[in-house]
Image (cartoon, rainbow, N blue to C red; front, side):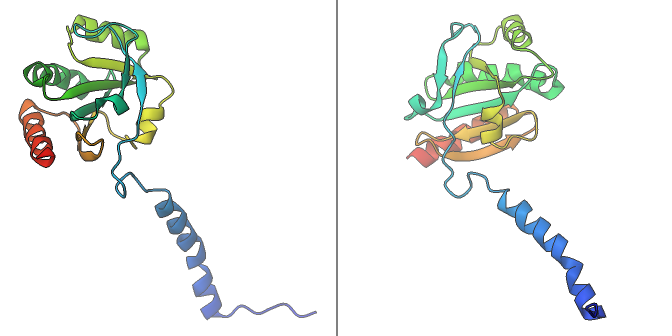
Length: 181
C-alpha cells in the first residue's frame, strides 16, 4: 500500500484550515443584540436605597414607556465608585422622565458589600445584584463600569464603557427623548 503524497500546494491550503475554522466559530459566537437591539429582559431584587425598599423587584419589562439607564458596576471598581454620585445626581434631577438601575457584579464583592456601599453613599436610584451573572452575560458586559441606554420601547439605544459623567448622561437622555418623539 502506497502512502499518499503531500505536495506543497496541499500543505499550504491545509495550514489555513485551523485558522478558518477558528474564525468561523469565533465570529458566529460574537453576535450581540445588534440585529434586534431588543434589551434582554431581567428581574433583580433591589438593595435598600433612599427611594427603594430592600427586596423590591426591578423588572425591566415593566419599565416600558420610560427610557431606562442600566449601569453595570461593583464596589471595588474605582471608576464604578467614582461615577455613582454622578449617576445619583442625574437620577434625582430626572427621576420623573427616566428609570435608573445599577446592577452589581458579584464575585470580588459580596451582595452585602453592595448594600453597604449604596447605604453609605446615600444612593437614591434602584440598585441590586446579578446573583449568577446572567444579566451581565445577556448584555455581553466585558468592561466595568458599562452603562446601557434602553429607550422607552425596550430597544438598546447605546452603550457607554468606562466612567460616565453627568454631561454624558444628560446628552444620552436628550437622544433617548428625541428618539421617542
